[in-house]
Length: 294
Image (cartoon, rainbow, N blue to C red; front, side, top):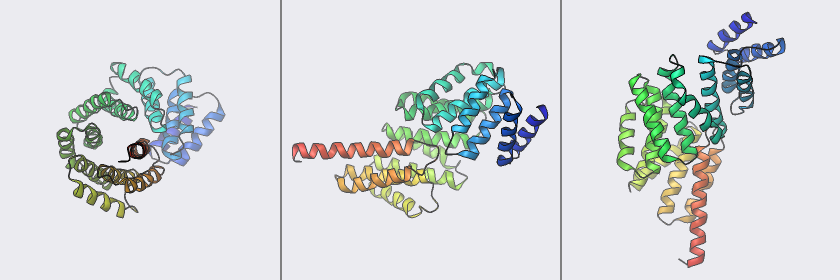
C-alpha cells in the first residue's frame, strides 16, 4: 500500500491525472487507505471530473472517515470547503472554511499558503450567500495575506473579486482602487478578461454607461475565446444598464443570454445567481408597471 501511495502521489504531481485516478481506484480495491491517499484521489477527481464533483466529494468523505490529524486534517477541511463552494453548497462550505480558519494555528506549515486561500474561498462563499459585509472582510484578509507572502496571482484574483463586491455594494472608489492595484497583476488572458468585465461593471454603476456597454459589446463579440463567466457577466452588465434606462425588453433579452452563458460555467454559481437576480428585477419592474400604468 505504501508503494501504491507513492505511485499515486508521483502521478498526481506530474499531472498524469487519468493514470492517477486509475491508481487510486486500485488502492480502493486493495483495502483501506490512509486519509492522504483519499485526499490525493479527491484532488485528482476535482480536476479530472469537473464539473461533476461527486467523486471528489466521496473521496474527501473517505479521507474524513479515515481519521486524519494535524496537517492532513487541515488540508482535508480546506479542500472540502473549497469543493462544496464550487458545488454550490454554500452553507456547508462556510461551515468547513470557518472551521479550518478557526484552527489554522494548528497547522503552521499550511498557514503561509492556506490562510489566504481559505479566506478567499470563504469570501466567495459569503458572496454567494449574499453576506456582503462578511465577504468584504474575508477578501481583504485574503488580499493582505497574499501581499505579505508575495503571491501575485492569488492577490490578483482576490482584488478582482473585491472590486466586484464593492461594485455590488456601490462602493465606487474602493472598487476602482482594487481594480487599479489588480491591473499590473494581470499576466494571463484569463486575468485580463476578468479585468475588462470588472471595469465595465464599475463604469456601469459610475454612470459611464456608453463606455461600459462598449466593453460589454467587445467581450460578447469575442465569445469564442472569452471565458463563459465573463460573457455571462457582460450580458448581465448590459442588462443592468438597459434596466436603468427603462429599456425593460432589452434588459430581458440580456438576462436570458446571461443565464444561457452561466450554464456553461463549470465551477462557479455566481454568474447564474447574478443573471437570475436581474431576471427578478425585470419581473418586479414589469409588475410595478402593470400595477401603476407607468
